[in-house]
Image (tube, rainbow, N blue to C red; front, side):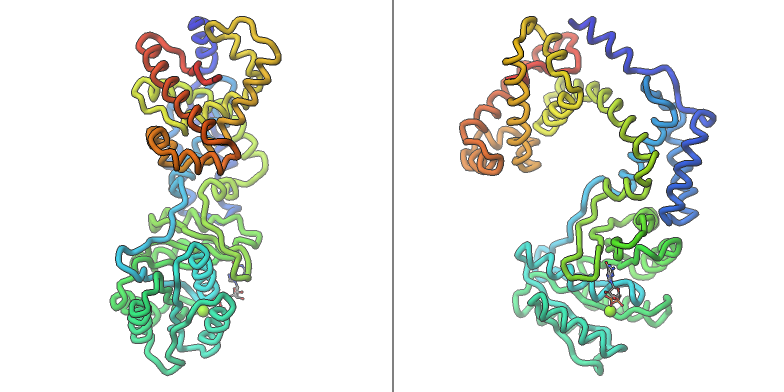
Length: 439
Ligand code: GDP
Ligand code: MG
């Protein structure tokens, strides 16, 4: 058995290595894609340089061209730069959490303030919005109207007040009323100017926000970079909201903002309505920035091959007892992708003769497992013991997946048994594919 897997393995590992000369086309393609997505020119140059250096000498999996492998590396690096996972809004230990909105005029700050308040309200965090844009009376009315619409109180002192003082009193009020999060909307100018920066800085100094969110219009294109640099250097931002992503922008500003400030994009605005706010997901943005055309097809193709190679990492995990439900799910999906469950099962010890019926059962079993694992929290996936020791957790997972508590119970105990079995097998020369998972 292990001979057969061993040779399959060898086939997967290629001989080629990535070099300057064998990725010329891909380099050009990536540069074009990034520029078309409106990533700042300097950011594109630096980013590509970094990736190229990283990729030099990387082994190419056979069946994948060096170009394809390189694009996969680019995609991964895009993800890495953008932070892999969504970063939620901060929450202060002592309420209220204070969020300060910053950005140029017309980028969507006021709209984003209301969108954010609505988003928080939906997850049961009470909100207050503070109107400090005293320069345009209409701006205060705009926030008040939005506040009524989403049923969130607005603190304002009319257009005579001093923005710093309004912010200070607004936060005080929120504190007195036991509000969870107070969002301070601010004035913007059409261009960065010293007065605006000074005012923002002093609001920040006064209310000591937990978040300073730079609101960036995705259509800003190239300028998003210098804008971010100025705001980050002079004010210090903790994150950004990228608005107007419902337009044709491919969102290159996301990469610029992230590379330059090092701070995460937390949300994207996808329309004028107050509901039109979404959490920012780096993987979706990476795909959008790279473009959906040929490039992505290449990535996907490469991805499939590389996932197979992941089995090697999986083996290490198994041996070090770090194999968890997330890894398990990955393996299940891999099996599904490879289509022929039967072929694999036949390679496993003691499974020589398998009827079609048994095969079908195997497939059903896979689906069940997947549904139940999908209903687990990330913590439970990492630590199956949590489920083993808590009937209420198992009931929740059962409810979420449409199965019964004993099903979850069985999955957990099977998993634990399988894991310890794999570890024992692994003491020798265990090939990457865990065998006990067919239930
Ligand atoms: P502010 O000056 O930064 O406060 O910007 P506003 O919140 O007043 O928004 C300026 C304009 O952009 C308004 O017409 C908004 O309706 C519009 N807007 C804001 N966010 C979005 C968005 O995500 N998509 C679209 N299509 N329009 C938006
Ligand atoms: Mg405004």
